[in-house]
Image (tube, rainbow, N blue to C red; front, side, top):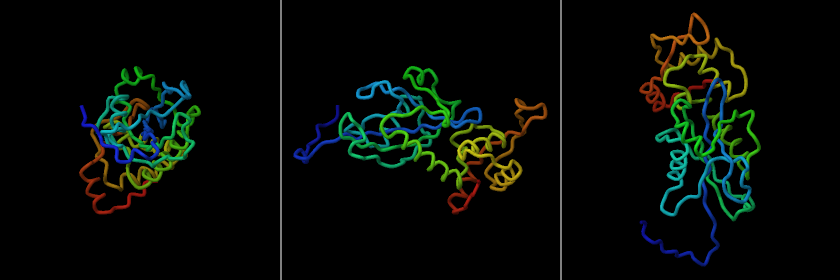
Length: 234
């Protein structure tokens, strides 16, 4: 049991602090978002990002990690603070602010039974239903952040399976940017970055000839980041 907290600011107005998680995944060439139907009033039953109020004894980023683990069973995944959403009228339930956090997870690793238990669903970004409160804006902001990050860093680390093909990596970038990329130029560029390790294995699910599988070279990637290298992938 946590120690009681002295409230030296008791004479001031109170408000709630929440965290909302924009959880991205990538599957079958599509960028997807994990959402569920809100289980509390007001606006119960409407589509929502997955979030929680921050407890008195936890940091905001710890609250976001707690939410992610409770829903997906995952820990130690990429998660980054997006921004604070604090418009006075944003939540009809009571005055509150929310700190948006976006996460990138591999869809072959999360706990499917746990996600189903919480009534959460994966939706393609292009087919998202209207979300509650300011969650549509949160998703829009997270996508813009993801596009900027993907332009300078090989974000496939967090979204692709451990082994993948160059076409699968290209599909990921096309899903993020929502446009087609020239296959020859993309392949030439990503291989020139020297952050991929070619395996002696092929994926033959799409053709008899198959495509070679690759893994990310984490060691070389970290060294390049530390050197200030500009990836400029797309």
